[in-house]
Length: 152
Image 1: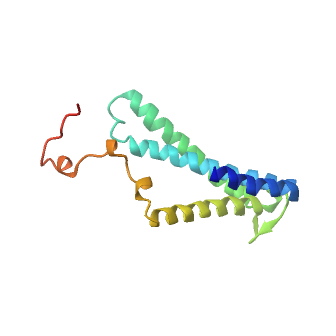
Image 2 (image 1 turned 90 degrees about the vertical axis):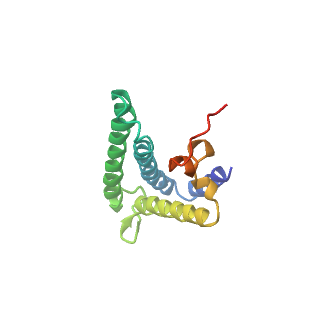
Image 3 (image 1 turned 30 degrees about the horizontal axis):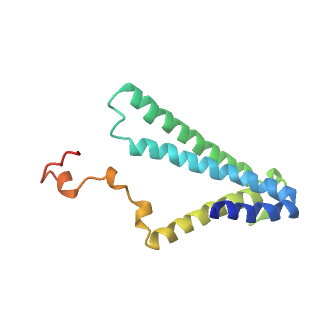
C-alpha cells in the first residue's frame, strides 16, 4: 500500500507537469529493474552454491543461467547509465550536475533505496534481514557437538 501510494504521489503530479519528465522517469526505472534483477541472479547462484555441482541440471539452471542473466543485466545497466548520462538521450533534454535527468533520477532512487535499507536495518528490524528458522541450524549442530533432532 505504501509503495503504491508513493508511486501515485510521484507519477500523477508528473503527468500533469510534463509528459516528457514522466518519460524521463520511466527511462530511469529501467536502470532500477536491471539492477534489481541482476542482484537476484547473483543471489540465486550464491544462495544455491552448495547445490550447483550435484548434477548437470542444477549447474545449468541454478548456476550458469542465472549467472549469465545477471551478467547480461549488469552490462545493460552500465551501458544504459552511459547512454542516459547524455542529456540528448533525455526526453526533456534537462541536465542536473551535467548529467542527463534519467540517470540522475535512476541513481537518486537507487541511493534512496540504499538509505532506506540502512535505516530499516539500523532501526532494529533484524528479522527482515535474517533467515527464517527453517533455514537455520542450531550452532551446536553446526559445530558437530550434538546430533540434529529428527523432525516428526
